[in-house]
Amino acid sequence: MRPTVLAVLVSLAFPVTAALAAAPTATGSSVPAYVTAAINDPARKDDAPNDDRRKIADLMAFAEVKPGEAVVDLIPGSGYFTRVFSAIVGPKGRVYAVWPNEYGKEAQSDVQASKALVANPHYANVGVLMVPAAQFKTPEKVDLVFTSQNYHDYPDKFMGSVDPVSFDKQVFDSLKPGGLFVVVDHVAEAGSGMRDTDTLHRIDPAIVKQQVESVGFVFDGESDVLRNPADPHNIKVFDKSIRGHTDQFIYRFRKPG
Image (cartoon, rainbow, N blue to C red):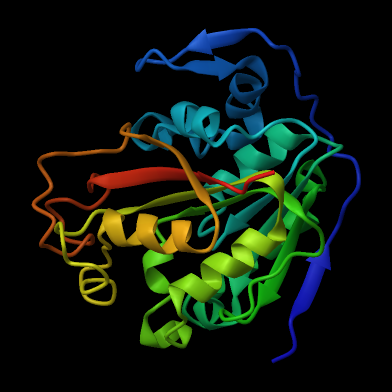
């Protein structure tokens, strides 16, 4: 299938405050006012009930996303993060909701939801990109590639058994010098590597760090706001006892430059 691109890059009809004042979160981290304004966008009223559980303020501050930037929301699911990114980067920024073709076949309703979002003038700075899983690319060099709970999918059969290191190199090449790659995923048992990616939908954080650093990224920090020590790490993330509250690592990698 040839990649298709639906990108509409016109002004966003939402005033994003670019003030430098910041508000502290429960963890004591500093959240820029433009992030707070984006989270408080009335268009996100259906997302708001999940904000505390998903630690959206902390996560956006950690991802260092700023007004005017170009951002990739890789495998965006319901669009929860896409909507926040759109409001943060504002009318001078761009958000690319990137769907691997293979994943899109398994999540057709979510892909259609992404395309519907693009058609909404409120999210006019969002574009949808459909690309082969093994050929990650962007129309321009970007400031941030962000993926939540999906890094572990790339080596799986339904995605074409993509080599994560090859994928990481493509992400590296898509970023501007100094650009960031932020990975959020479900924690697997220590030392398990990629053993549980297709069964439990988990991955060992150590193998992710090893793979991403191997292509030239520099490890730039981690956040523990989604960690849960009560997660046993050996059950499916969809198990009712843990779903929505899995132990998740958040890693930030920077492209030198």
